Amino acid sequence: MIHMRRGSRFAALALALAAGAGPLVAQAQTRVSATYEGRLVIKLLDVRHDAALTPAGYRAGARISTGGLAGAVKPFALVVRSEGRRRGAALASERYRQQQGSKTRLVVFPAPRAPGAVDPLTQLLRLQLRPQAAGPCAGRLAIYDGRQRYDLVFARAGSGAAEPRFAALGLADGRSCRVTFIPLSGFGGEKGRPPRPKSDIVARYAWSGAAQGWVLTGLAAGTPLGKAELTLHDLQVVRAAR
View (cartoon, rainbow, N blue to C red):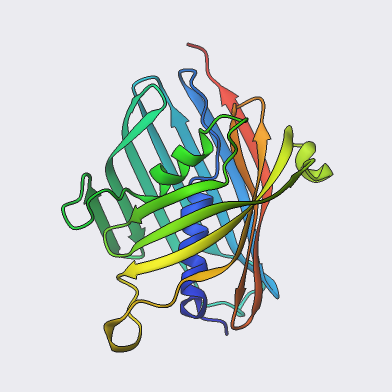
């Protein structure tokens, strides 16, 4: 049986990137749903993300759960929600809730214990709202989920046409980002020190014309058990009547 704790850093990264995976457009009552599959030798994770943005605010959520071969993976389910205010292109997180089994964590922002950092959903939504010309692969994101504090540093690693399977979902202009995951606190580790930074991570994005935003299409990272991958399975953009 594979225990999720063996890939805890990849799980945290998958949470951060996939939870903010859906693009958000400026029109009122626009809803986006994206589903992903995570594999490590076999299928391990199912990820679903839902988000909505209005001119005054936003709400986003994700569910990450084990899936695939029965009995090969210890049952695991994580549900996260975030909401906040919006002014123009700026998103300001207000509340973040994370639930795993009977344990629930609520964080109110700004958080005194992590000044300058916000929840993973909000931070990645900011990235995905960047203009097409700017691209998603630049900058350092400060993230705090109420326990773990970490940074994600993005650098451009390549570009090209979207893969046919993603083009069929209305995506184009593929971009590859080299991502460095820098754990700062809340991860345990030897002698109370956080784990070492992880830099063998590649995140792939493509542009959604319908949603006017960047969509995470894939994520790959090395683990002690082999290469872990997260891949976009389906994407839906629905614009409700105003």
